[in-house]
Length: 380
Image 1 (cartoon, rainbow, N blue to C red):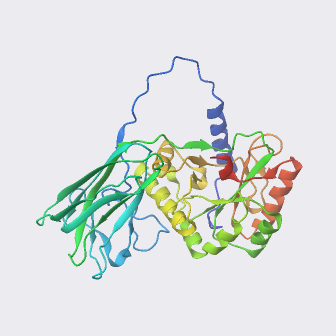
Image 2: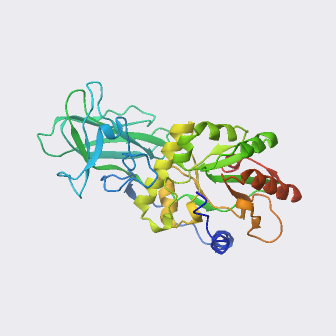
Image 3: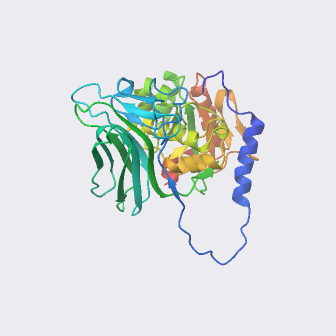
């Protein structure tokens, strides 16, 4: 985060950490196992009705939850005669070689059946899904006759499927088309796990670095010289401004680049649907820039609620991670008694003090007999 928006107070951070520890420590009364029940069927699509605005710090002209190949030159949210609500997506292919495709990644479960649908208007409009592990024919219409028509396709994922790509597009030289009320109906995934540390008896500690606004050669050199495995949680905007920097500072084995939202907002003040946009769009940016989809989400300000855990799961995130120590900006706060412990997660930030912050965190780890390790390796 920028220096003008320093993180949570120490008391709020302690409260978050204590809440996590307390929740994990509550004993569970033994009882006969309850009969298994099927997960409720929900719509897993992000911003399905095109009603949500793009978050702050998002790319100009972007459509929340969606990636349109032609960008704002082709795709826009309009308020002219939507199928329902106040908005719909209207795409006007900019050239003869464009179909005006818009798509999103949807987290799914293996060997599971889903139904994809969308209301469309125009000529030769297609709705389809790829990445299922099986061939799936798209649904399409030659013309909707000027009105709205629903396209539907049903698919079953293969044994290795964890995400699919949902797309809508027109056809070459067939003019504009509109889309509204998109759905992928299937079982709701289990909420992501919340954690402030990693359960392990290994003598390891995990160094995590947030935001990315200040990228210094001193920090980069310290990481390289000490071969530190770093888990970076950059925002998409600074990551996109200097992706090579983040590739270099996460080159040590065990390092990874994970999800930190688009706008660095307090997610606990947003709806589940808005949180899903923040997390999924940041996931897509990280995947596009660095080639691997994140599986860990760091909530800004450590602010999260039950909707955060569900939204994260809907984006394919397995762990919502806070921390139990903070060494940012000259601090040395450990939010439990005594020194750093095995499995502790240390919070730092990409700032002009990061090189000395890392040195201080590494000294604290050494004093406790701990070595930095790769977080993603321990969360698999």
